[in-house]
Length: 367
Image 1 (tube, helix red, strand yellow):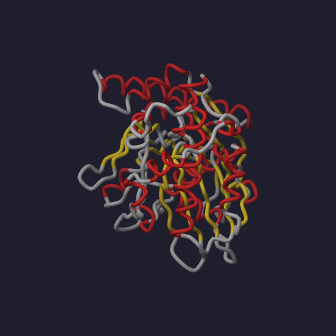
Image 2 (cartoon, rainbow, N blue to C red):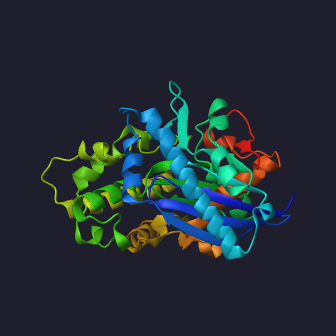
């Protein structure tokens, strides 16, 4: 397997901004993070992206223009990575860019997904080969097209002597179960931060609840939590994936009576994330010995404290202990997926996505 440098770019469901990483892979596919950079979305772009999650006037034109805008922001992030590491474009084999998801509908009667990025423009701006559109080949093969990071988790975090569950808590929370004796499995277990962030912004003006401090001032509303967790999605068996198409502020408001205090709703939303994670582990991965957390949720002190209590029979840690910092796991995953595409190696795991076989993922835009 070829070694070399790749860049991974991820802008996720949380809509906070762009994570970009420069990764060096050795001959054993081990990843070393050389440089990282975060580029936040401004409020205008975030609002426009949120609007594109729903049908509206002139949406095709708006989507195309935002794809170009995103590509320029991605390119600036690449330029900063190269500048900080004193490298030229020719020193990077390829960029793996997920793009910004605005629709994800994996249901059999729909089966489509849309990520905004002008990959051709990104290749022109950076002078580096770009791989994008990672989900559609898996969907064409009968899969959900997500989650895709479990394949990277397997490559980086599998251990021959232990059973591990990796939890990525971004806008959506997803699990990967790594047991050396059985095939890898994983799925989106429900909302991660996206509902908490939306509710926090609406009531405090802050884009997220730092350390879960605001949620800590409230009390969980049992009836509301029961209403949340009774949603059909939680009863579905894997493979399954989800996003803002289901879990959004409209979905949240449909469960409210109108008299709840905002801080109690926030506490209940945090508990929803915790409950959906812990119930999923208990139901599908009870043999887990250690749970490793990555994504923005790893920084939420209150959430981590409650997760530790709920998973008291297991060790709880962050992926930093496994050599990849929690904030950069997903971006590193797309650098790895780009490498898989260049090497013509599969990037999906059929037992995770439900695809009928392994597939090489991504469309290649040569420099």
